[in-house]
Image (cartoon, rainbow, N blue to C red; front, side, top):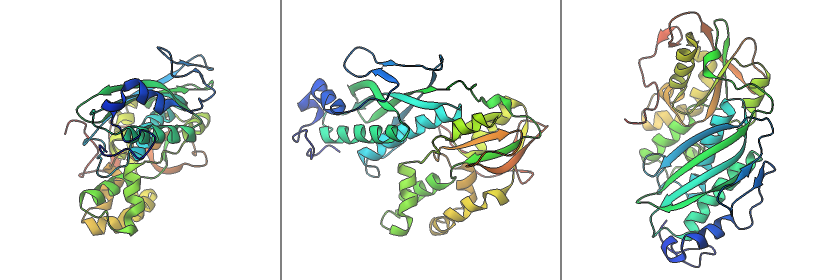
Length: 326
């Protein structure tokens, strides 16, 4: 990431090119989404809020904690930064409209590497019909990417974590366990095996079910969350906020287990640990008063009881999810 520049940075590093030359390179030729009425070039951007309210979320990725430069390309890192933030907007029942991104990097980082991050940011944002409205570029001892996501509820009420009620069904949209499987494969040295290539890539670039958050809100979802820390951990937030218990049915999650079973056999892991406790898939989990809409599958039920998440009626003894300061 610090070597020769293969793009139009003419082989220069960030220090050699200078902040404003690099910024001009990163924003040149970009077309803003309709919601962005004023993009980069002034002291601040202007983003329309057609609903009269704006959904806002922010998240940060730090090198060697959230991504590794020897695993991920700059483009992968840019895509991941947008995906994990967009999933938070989806989990509120909103639609992401714009992102503001701050990027910190050492001065010997190549301009082409920075451009690769920018391309990844833009490519993922375009999947949502959104764009990068602005940001910042600073010197840092390692790569740090901070993203603020803006979204539109389009007249809907936000879907909070606190609305689940006894008798609701629990459903998920998206796939579980893939990112955790991919991480294990990278970490255990399976990067050379083509049969696991898709799982390894899913750790580098998650695939949130874009559009399903709004669909769930329109279908009457009572609570919703992004599965970023792990299914059990994130459903635990809903259980605590709502004051209810949740019981998951592993029969409804067996497809996820089967999808990662071969990788688990190769690494010596329990596939259920990845499905139930693995984070960063950025699937959506929600509760509904009845059947969920298309694109969602029932995985459990909400019951009147202590705020806990059970698995087949029992407390799960394995990994329950990601902890930021472990």
